[in-house]
Image (tube, rainbow, N blue to C red):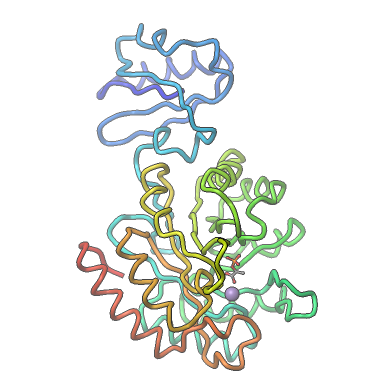
Length: 337
Ligand code: PEP
Ligand code: MN
């Protein structure tokens, strides 16, 4: 249930009211915006009528939440969530945050070179996989812990915070120092993993499952928030459809839908969405136009020799060109990169 309190309700009254609600067995989430304070009640609200709340004269309105997700819902938390990492923010409405780097970390030379290049072009985060979810057990599986160390070397050299995928609960300790932890499409419904990353405070970049509905996607984000981690970034990376002329089908309409339905930042991964290098810049422009808060783009210094996803990786020069164009598209909406 959502209970909206009138503006300027004295703090003591708000605290007393929340205390009463807690005594009745509800978990109470407060969202204090500029125009109103919203209380989100979680628990068995079936025995409470919204009208009962109106008996308090500082209550403006009360209503039941029909959606199965609560903490991710914009009705629970009307203000945008802004995820901040080392001076970079995702979801601030003013900028388009670009994360870029290789699909997989391969060597120190490779990751540092790509990191320097994407930084020079304006990327604000370095992406790179150390633990790779590969369809074939015979494909390169990533450098693992060594790859994480190389990402940290690149972070030190460039100052770029790092984004990298966590695949299993037993890797969590290794990730304590990772700026944004990615949960990949294949693990979107690994509920035990979601509960564990929910106990951390590192921001979580949650990618949409290969064939997940929006509701399933949001329920997965709810798992993370319900375990206590409010720093969730949603990432659309293309879904399976009946057609396979592209690797996946980029669901652009999910962006405005999610921006309305949730308060969480939404970014787009055009690289995995189409799987074809030449199409990536065009989809990136479209992502900016539909209001995405950011992009995550694969860039490799030698795509032909890449150990993973070379066919969809931009060269540093193509990335640089793309960033220049994206800056113009962002400017049309009064945003910067
Ligand atoms: C990736 O980002 O390299 C990746 C494997 O992404 P996804 O989980 O979206 O396939
Ligand atoms: Mn990849």
